[in-house]
Image (cartoon, rainbow, N blue to C red; front, side, top):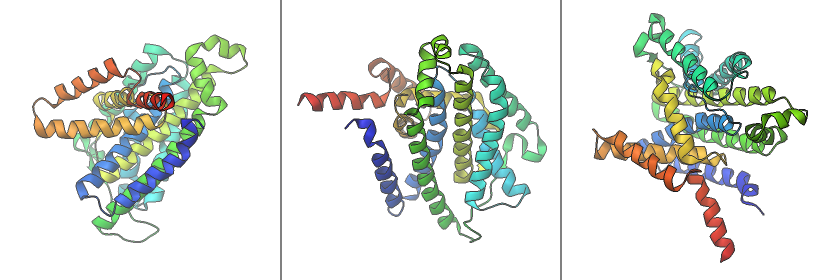
Length: 316
């Protein structure tokens, strides 16, 4: 049986292990796990795009849209149910991605990258100057509830942790199935040779559009989880440095498997946390050095180590 065939079972096992860990992890570790998963969801979308030859420097756009959708739903509509908030964020990502995707699916290579960056920075500029949304300071997000039940801070954090793990497991499984579907294979085929895909009767633009919308939805969900996790949203979520971080993580983890996004996010967060602790003034140097080493020795990302382990196991 191939390694990829075991992916659904592995997803369930990891999700259950993390959920059990919620009852023994210290608060700081639970907070980090949720933060890692939230960013990983955005990176999953980046990976979907990269597998079809598109590099987005503007996924912070949908990350921010998801976060602000949660914040505005709680602030203006009085919505606090976590399931409804996540649904609103997903719909915000779906609608905005579907509309903007009509334009973005026309562009390729550097034009796509710079256009996505420009859109993200436009949103950043608008939010930074909108007083009703807190301007550059942003605003606080409501404490989540579940099916009308009021929760204290500890219970709300536990709820968010469990929902995040379940959501990540579902998203990872669906994206894994997408990668193994005809449309998923069409994405990699388009990257190899767009003209030949057209000869096969498929529309490359349709493939790009589908991938773009998927990436928008998962990025919005990642932004929603981040907003609920920290209890605050701000325009920095749409800033170019945030979008660059997502690409950084995607390259670190690898694009050949959906697990690469989660592994890359975990490694990134751990390295940054300890780098900040050990060398507050030089943590970016440490992070950059780690990235250079990964590019040199693992050009296909940390996930590529599994192929090496599998090959060694086969030889044994």
